[in-house]
Amino acid sequence: MEKKEKNNESKFIGMFEWCKEQALLYKDGKLEQWKIDKLNSIGFSWDYYLTTEEDLKEHIEKDGTEELINLIY
Image (cartoon, rainbow, N blue to C red; front, side):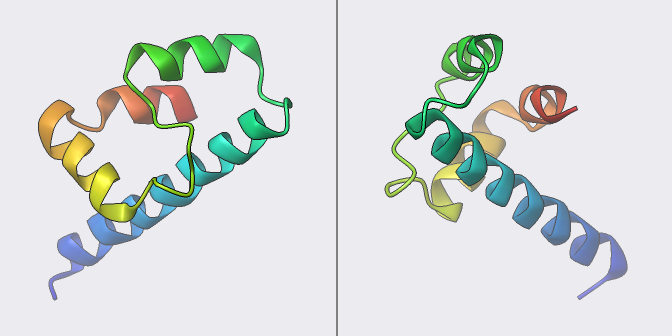
């Protein structure tokens, strides 16, 4: 695997973990409303049991990563 591919895979895994964390915070009622609104605007899945790496990959391929990355930072 090339260095660039490995770096992209690391970013993807980090993003997947971040998404799972947001879903858990939402479930616990600890996620800020502005984040809920932004994530809802891009069709975020709040059911973290159904959110898989494949779901996230599909979203990234369809809509790109820019919106998710902007939400993270």
